[in-house]
Length: 73
Image: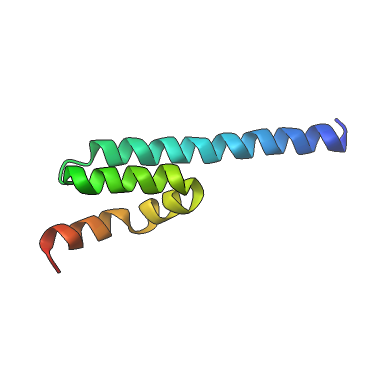
């Protein structure tokens, strides 16, 4: 396999993984039972508007941020 073919293959799998993480984050936001509709819409806007950064924020801090907002602290 040539270097160009290998690079293309790595790029395709990398993009596929990024898209999969974004889709999983969107599904988690949609299925989060305690998330009010306004916060749900905000998270969807963040995930769609800033897909990579939004996904990292959701997986890193999303549930914790949501719990603090809901508890009022």
